[in-house]
Image 1: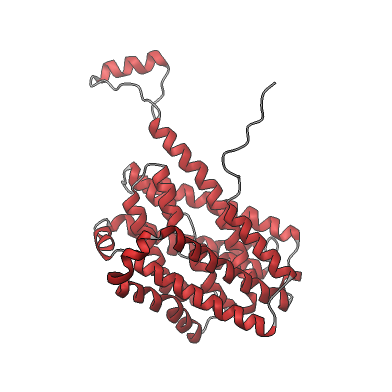
Image 2: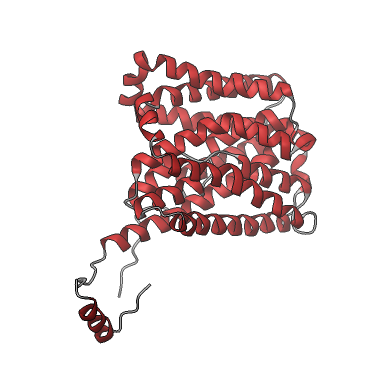
Length: 347
């Protein structure tokens, strides 16, 4: 009788379970009145600290070295802020038959959010790709997103996104100013931040949980959750699965068509096909206010989906590279005879 083998890792990221638990807490015990004001102020401060730490972590020398690989970074930025939004606009044809207006608005906002940093690096490393390029590409995308995401939201979402000059100013003060402050303070606190990555990682995740609780509490108090049916949620999952599949294919085969090597293609695929929960949540809370819970729901679902799918792809890429390959003869005729004899097909 065979023993059942438990998986070494759970199929769902434990942090996603914490996010779902935070949503459940907001549904049962939403912050109201003074508590809501305190939670909102605390989340604003936490996100400011988060981006200050981001600024302190990013080495200016690494950033300047990464600029040399400008074609790769331009490709990732184009995928993140051009191709993704175009696909989001194309999905407007699914409204209202497949997606209602609130979910479509959240889906479109999802396509405007910058790429991830940590997971892009982790998956690129797992797949034996160009890790330094992934570090720079993710960092550049996050920095560019502080400006590009609200500008794109103003152009594509307009009034439905709650955009105003004041909201752009709040995003600049909450995200860009702390990031620049972190860069200026890096000389004094950069070493401290680098030595305590694990502890500061808890600050990262804790601040996101606080933003999630605040946003979903506002949604519960305003009663926005009564507008979504399970059928609509199922439709959203299908749309996001198609969106992720299209971007994974475009980044992999498109980068090959552009002449990039395998390691660069791995970095482009993982940095150009994902969206950042850490950057998207605080921006949504500013842009959408009480409706932020609906706006970030597509992003939260996409975030979990991309982690699970990219983990499988990264493992497959590493196995493909590690698999032994038949010897290649320098003689074309001999190579043809070997292929014919073993039944090997090219391509």
